[in-house]
Each structure stands twice: as structure tokens, then as C-alpha cells.
Image (tube, rainbow, N blue to C red):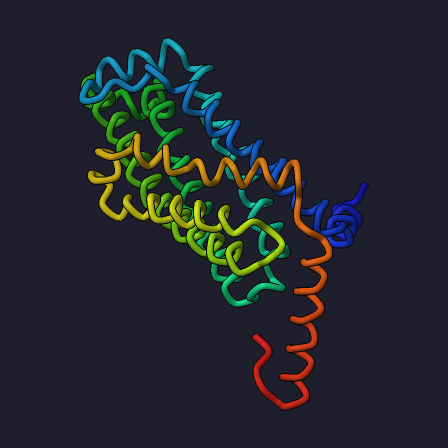
Length: 254
């Protein structure tokens, strides 16, 4: 099946089907992110470059699994972003586009961060150029790359926080999804913004994770219930009429 045909089928899907696709891909993203965290669990020892390097080399396949899971998670989130943009266009095209922008920037930063995640394997892998460094220096360099990965990931979380905040606003204004989901998503977004100060975010990480309950509930709602198609169609028709009227009057339609 060609990519063009697949894209055409997705674009022609009903709002409820798109919502369920978004929910399914979002759940897959959560699963891949959890797998990545599980694969790296215990391998990185805080403040211990030598122990961390030893763990990575001893469990290289597990470390690579974490990297692969991260890449798949990013791909899933990109698809979720596109689907949510399409779903919320009738509510407010500009805000929906802005939300997609924040998510795309977050995904780009996270993808770039994955290079730092992979770098320790290159540094510790015994490449010809590594012979000019002492073992301790290579271990410290590998650990530094992992710290850079953590810092870059924290920056990505800020952009995802803005994304969740805007999605919460769109849900609250939508009428085709429960308003409470919008409130909870906004709370999750505000929690993500705590990573504007990485040290503050790390300190209160358990509370931030707890605030993500809104995201989990939205994922389940989209997957099981989808959206109210009649109300979605009403919003879409109203948005088209508004743009048509603005076009007649020679005014901007975005």
C-alpha cells in the first residue's frame, strides 16, 4: 500500500476513528517510553562514571533497546501530534497549529537528545581514536554524554508541557470531549513547565508524574470513546462558515 493511499485513507477517516487512532498511537508512545526507562533502569549510576560505563558495556543490548524504544516513541508522538491537530482545527485552527508546533519542537529536541544517548556506546566501544584517552577519561566522557541527554530531554519536556496546556484549552472549548479532560491536561501541561528549571523538575518529579494522570485519562478516552461526532461536525461546519464569511469580507481566515 502506497504512502499516498495510506494518507488519503487517514484523512478521510471519521473524527471518531481519528480520535481512536490518536489514542492507540498515544498508548503505544507511553508503552515505548516506559520500555525505554525500564531498559536503562539500574544501568546509570548517579555520580559514578566508572560503574555506569561498566553497566552499559555489560548490558549493551539492553541499552540499545532503550535507544530503539525512544526512537519509536518519538515516531508515535509525531503521528499523535498530526492527528490531534486535525481533530482540534475546528475549535481554533491557530491554537491547534501552535500546539502542534510546540510538540514538533519537543520531538525534534528529544530526537537530537537520543544522539547523546547513543554516544556512550561509541566512546566506550574501543574505536581506534579512543586509544589516545585513558580509560577513566572515556568513562567520564560517556557519563557526560548521558548528562547532556538528560538536560536535552528536560528541555523537550518544557515544549511538551506547552503542548499539553494548549491541548487542554482546546479540549475545554471543544464541546465534543469532556471539559474535565481539558482541565486535567492543562494541569499536566503546567507540571511539565516545571522543567523550565531542570533541578526543580527533578526534585518534584514524583508529583509531576502524578499530574500526568490527565494525559493517561485522555488517552483512554480517545481509545475507547473517541469524540462526539455530531458535535465535532457542528464545530467543523461553523468553522467553515466563519472562514467563508471572512473570505467574502476580505479578512484573514486564520
